[in-house]
Structures are given as C-alpha cells and as structure tokens.
Amino acid sequence: MGEILPKTGLVLGVVGAGAMGRGIAQVAATGGMKVLLIDSRPEAVADAKQHIEKMLLRAAEKGAMDAAKAREAIALVEPLNSLNGLAGCHLVIEAIAEDLALKQDLFAQLESIVSDDCILASNTSSLSITTIASKCRRPQRVVGFHFFNPVPLMKLVEVIDGLRTLPCVGDALMDVGRRMGREPVRVKDAPGFLVNQVGRAYTLESAHLVAEGIATFAEVDAVMRDAAGFRMGPFELLDLVGLDVNHPATQAIYRQFYDEPRYRPSVLMQSRVDAGLLGRKTKAGFYEYDESKETAAASPKPPSGDISVPVWVSPAEPDAARKLIALTNQLGVRVETGDKPSDKALCLVTPIGDDATQCAVEQGLDAGRVVAVDTLFDLQKRRTIMSTPVTQTQYLEAAKTLLSQDGVAVTVTRDSPGFIAQRIVAMIVNIGSSVAQLRTASASDIDKAVKLGLGYPHGPLAFGDALGASTILKILKNMQRRYGDPRYRPTLWLARRAELGAPLTLQD
Ligand code: NAD
View (spheres, rainbow, N blue to C red):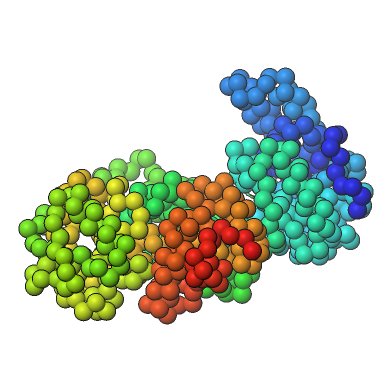
C-alpha cells in the first residue's frame, strides 16, 4: 500500500447514515474532511444532512464553534445516491446494519469501485474485523473504527487491527481519529474489542449477585454510586442502554470466547428480556419509567438497635480493622481491644473477598453475633454490612444503628463473598487485566478507553492500583475458593504484579 492517507484533501466515504454514520460524518467534516454520505434509504441521507446542519449551527449559536467553521463543515458533507460516487475516496467507513453478510457484501462491492489503496473501515460493535475482512480481495486494508454513541459527545474511538490488517492502516486511522477530534486507542481484534469487553464485568457481576438474593437492584446501584464512586449504578445503566442491546452482546462475547466463565450471562437477564422489561425504552426495566404511575417512595425505618452492647473489631485484617476502628472512634464508640471478643460483644469482622460466615467459622467466633463491614471503599457516603444466616437480629440492628449514627446510609445485605462493591470492582479489574494479558490493548489504552467510553471513576488497572493489586488478588482468590467457580480465577497479569508489588498499569 502506498504512503497511506493525504494530510490535506482527504476524501472520506460514509456508508449508512443512521445514528452512527451521521455522527461520524459530522466529526469528520468538523475535522476538515470532505465526506460523501450514502445510505440504502435516500431519505436517511437527507435527514442526516439536515441533522448535521442543525447540530453544527446550534454549536455555533452556543459559541462552542466558530460560525464560519460550522458553515464550512456543513458544506463538506455531500449526499450521494450511488456507491460508484465513492470511487475517489481515500477511506470508506461503513456504519450500516450489524449483519456480517451485509457488511461483507458491501465491502466486496466497494472493492470493485475504490482504488487498491483505499482503506475500508467498519464501525461494527460486535463482529470480528478479521471475519469481515476474510471475504475481501485485499484484507490488509480492512480495519475496525469503532465509535461510541452519540459520536460528537463521545471522544473515544477504538482502532481495531484485524489479523491481516497492515499496521500502517491502523496507524493512519489513529491519525484520522485525532483529526476528527477523537481520542483513539489501538486494539487487537477480540470479542467485544476493549470497552465492550471490560463493560461486561460491571453489569454481569451485579446481575449475578442480585440473582443470588444478596441485595436488590436499587441497593446495588446505591452502593456502586455512593461507596465505589460510579456515576450510574449498573441497573440504571442497563435501563438506559436497554437489555435487548446489552444481553445479546453479552451472549455473543461469552460464546466468542468459547464459554469463558468470566463472561457467563445471567439467567436474570434472559427472563427480563422475555418479559419485555427492557428499560427506559419500554418504560419498565429494573425501575419504572411510566410517569402516570405513582410510585410511593418507601421511607426508611430509623434504625433502632441497642448500641450499649459492647463492640469488638476483629484484628484478622489489620488494615481494614484500623479503618473500622477509626470510624467507630469518629462515631464516639469505644471498641474492645484484644484477640477475642467478650461474651456478649457484637463481633465486627472486615472481610476482603470472604463472607461473614467464613470469617465467623475460621476465626472461631459465635456466628450469632457476627456482622461484617466493608471497609474497602469510601465510608463517608454509604456503608455496607452483611450478616451470617444465623446472626441474631439484635446484633445486626445494633451494627446498623451504630454505623448510621452520623446520618450516613447503611446498606444491609445477605452474606456475600466480597459484599457488593468488592466483588464487582474486582471483576472489572480482573477483566481489564485479561485484556492486558491477551495484549488486546496496552495498559494505558485500557484505562483511557474505559474512562472515556464507560465513564468509570478510574480505568480498571488504575482502579486495581488505587485499592491495591494484592487486595484485588485476595478478593478474587477468596471468591474462587468460596464459590468454587473458575469465573473468579485471577488472571496471571494481575497475580504476577500483585505478587511482585508492581503496579497493574506496568506494561511489560
Ligand atoms: P442505524 O439503524 O441507526 O443506521 C444504519 C443505517 O444503515 C440505516 O440508515 C440503514 O438504512 C442503513 N443501511 C442498512 N443496510 C445498508 C446497506 N447495505 N447499504 C447502505 N446503507 C444501509 O444503526 P446505527 O446505530 O447507526 O449502527 C450502525 C453500525 O454501527 C452497526 O454496525 C452498529 O453495530 C454500530 N454501532 C452502533 C452503536 C450504537 O450505539 N448505535 C455504537 C457503536 C457501533
């Protein structure tokens, strides 16, 4: 292939003028590229052109863009009514329906129209770039260019190298992405590419723990927002995306990884899809969105436990115990010191990936008095506690009352290895580590892509470093031991770095 794309006068074809195609055309024109836009439905092109015009003029009105620049960009978008018009393009991006045969057909047609040097890019979100390219005469010019919706607002774009893609093709798209004002990351072809793969952990682990009866949807959302710092809870996010979109994507990624347990779908999702509880689009998902229906907000019962009971904090996890003792001091509660609790004391344990029952049994405590407190996350907005199946109500109530004395909300769950936030975040870190281990992307691109594409408080590897790689390793090992499920096995990327005290962000 020749020296790849011109610095000026680049002509771009966009096939498919739907939600994604029009967004791609808009950012390309804003970046000074001439855009030829085509769709099998001519009205879609006219509609897209109008939409782009409206968006750019509005940006100019708001002062977000120079008015002359907006007019220039609008003039750069040219509707086409025949694929033959793409003959002079340097690059064609397809954003047509998500159907392998359709995309392969389109690329075969394009190969008979464009020059041999023209790059063919697909905006597919779930199909393999290598498979799309496999029917092409020149698979080395086929590449993934995966934008996020809505394109003008989402800065991230994944540049995906298929197995036979020439490296200079991906390099050229990294440059085009920047010229479009995007933040490109480089990804090897893999199921779910980068962002959609890591994104599975948040929603799937949440669904698994709700299916197990550990907590409700709303409780999981509240903990992930208030304690773990996510902008949206996993079930709020699922309602926004729609289960009809999320669940098939999960199934595809699971199957494409030959039933990798980390991506195992939850039966909860399928039954909710069957029931039509898709989310905001059906006005009912994990939450109700029908404004005509009044939903009475449940007023929380004020905790009424007896806090005159003596309190003992287990020293089994020294760092966690110190954090809990600092909190009890802040709440004005003196705790017993000593290796063993006194006869009637409330026994607070601070597991890392264990459940309350296991702590009680392994530490030789009276399980009827054991309550576990999650100390790994921010304790100032919400606290999570859990009991064993035999913890006496008076002790659970005492713990709840004690920990909510300063008005901070307390979420009480059933026994769970890794509470709510520990297990969900550990899975995010582990899947991020798996993406790094498989060399799908560099450590820095993984973190950048997840922050930009999913809006998490940290990228998965930086999240692991913030909580401690050895802590994440411990959560996963304990969960694997407790559940006996290979779903929780830690990746070697994570284990090696944790064992060596090296950061997860360290690229080797
Ligand atoms: P869309 O339905 O909004 O638009 C698709 C457009 O393609 C339609 O206007 C349709 O008329 C046209 N089209 C279909 N077949 C065609 C063909 N053979 N030739 C020309 N035009 C054809 O879909 P979308 O949401 O814009 O998605 C497009 C692609 O982008 C899909 O591959 C999808 O997986 C991917 N994607 C979507 C999102 C998203 O959130 N919507 C995000 C990333 C990637």
